Image (cartoon, rainbow, N blue to C red; front, side):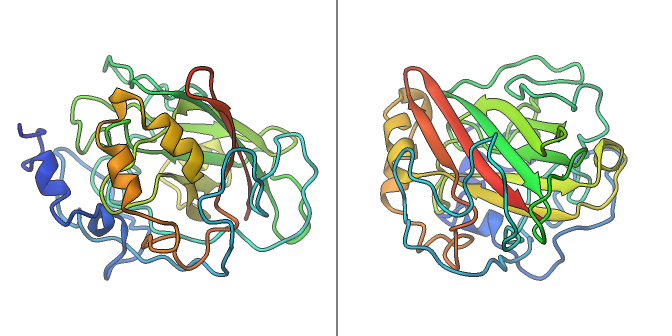
Length: 284
């Protein structure tokens, strides 16, 4: 396989047959203050921080439309409840904590994250997914109007822009919540790489200025996707080995979600031909 521009091949990055090593924390903290200044550093690329989610769910791999306590329609009224668990940001955040910082790039504040920005051209291919997040205060369910969310995830074939695809920065973006705490991202269903359940990463900030100026995130977590929907999507040839990778996994064995995914499992509706809408209530 060809080199990806950062000194390692795609195979090398998955050499544990578990992108697990990429996403499970080791010894360092989740949020580092070091900013990227010229050149892509590989230091700490396999270091991350551990999952500290709590609770458990019997909704393993729930199918389309099956809601969990973490899922909510975009127009629903939230109630008080547990915070969404803190999780590792993984080694490819591009938020300045592990090499590059995309958050100050012109165009990062956007709903459609399928294309690259900042002078790069390219569009990520895959089955469309509209991700609707509702961000609320865990203590009373009140919407966090103006809070900003930075979302990122892998491509259909399981690679991350900037780090593993060095000439693209798509599938990353920031949006601010409206008065009801709602945020919408138009993206694609992410693929499934070896060792990790299909997921999206996100960070919550106090506002857009915090998100784009290098301020520390107030919450870092991950979103799990339902098994049945992913199986339907992964029949698409653009998703490479995602279907076989998924067949060797379960939420109960995933290194991040194994200790409880109930508040992180999104509700999906739609089809591979028409695209999907995913919804999740994010208490923070």
